[in-house]
Length: 378
Image: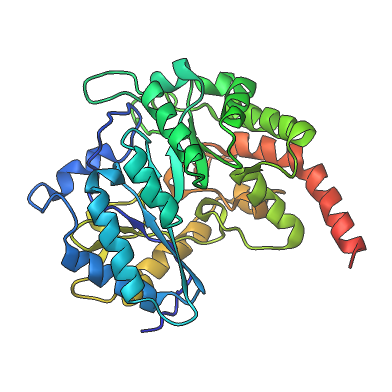
């Protein structure tokens, strides 16, 4: 079944919000109550139905499957062996499957990494900087530090030559140490880095966010400092996601990261019972699209509810955003962060606006230089 919206990435949560850690800033832990009466893990029946529908709906030659949580390794290694088996049984001619899994790294061992290596999984692994910075928020259910366990996972990923990306949450603490954070992540010998700003809304606070959320200006300073260090030392060797997105504007390319796209809706969430939601940050009754056991995922993705959700991102921009000189780089970022007032008093400006604007304006001369070279080369 072809899909009108065939460019998408599903965040599949085979164990829902279940996790072996209790990270203080995790936005998905609150979703544990959504499916208390459901089976704790995605059944083989739902899994097979999803994989077949995903393959049918995708128009890309490379079909990406993204396994998320909670902590997706809690589904067990046999679950992912079954994933690969079903994928291979239903692979269509001319298609190539890419599996990605996002993990906190604590459960990784030789058996896990041998499998991930043999099946060419891409791994996103979370760490928030050096030991003290990481342990400040990322602890076990019993309150124990996790840094050493995560580092063991890193060593195993390198031992088995698995392609991995470092995911680093930037919060009110580690944002003060951009060079220390960046140099530490570089020491892990990764080629790919994503910096994820922590923004947790608290309506009654003076700032509108928790004290652990990253301040907008500080986040901008962090990105500027990292960019300067990357430009001086690591250009061409390390890919930082937000830099890659900024550079796409030099070549008139569409953004690949949903938060910077003009419209959104291409990264829905599949819960373990087959329920499909509009977005990882909008898993609520109002954003439930339907269930793949009753409706094909292609029809859910191209349905009016999801299309309207995606279009609302651009339709609801403030005038301040629409007149912004770096609009093409940002497009107002993620709608979940649009809860402050613009300088003109219009509600709906992104909380991180000042930080992003500082960063994009800082790197724009370099991007314009790239554009000039590209045009000169025809």
